[in-house]
Amino acid sequence: MKNTVICDGTKIDALVHVAHNVNVGRNCSLTAGTVIGGSTIIGERCWLGLNCTLKHKIRIGRKVIVGSGASVICDVPDEDIVAGVPAKSIKYKVNSEQLFLMAEQVKSSSRNYKNMKHLLHY
Image (cartoon, rainbow, N blue to C red; front, top):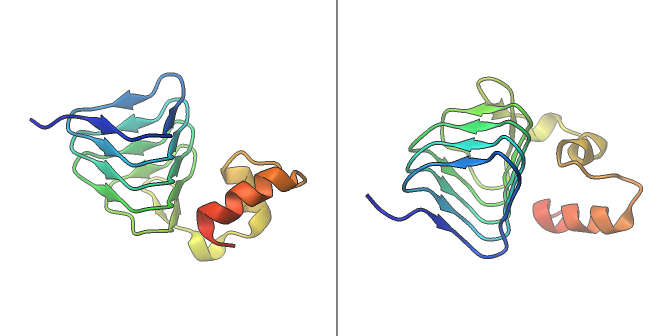
């Protein structure tokens, strides 16, 4: 078995389960109730929504948003947005207001808007 690695700047909320051999990139947010299966690799600047589940042995790209309650069962490419059970890409179906809601941001706050811009290059 390899080490589980959680890189600098990553924030972990309450009741998060990180299994064996997991590698979590820099500056990720793992919100409450997230479950990450063994040997999963998560890229930098990812946001994992409340109570989402990532199957074992998958890769999550950089700058990915996983919607609340999603069940991710296959690899997710860089800068994608996935939601649902099983999780599917919704990147081209989401408008900016929905994006803010998914990532628990308030649109009226310019500070939060700037945070989201750097996350997804808007």
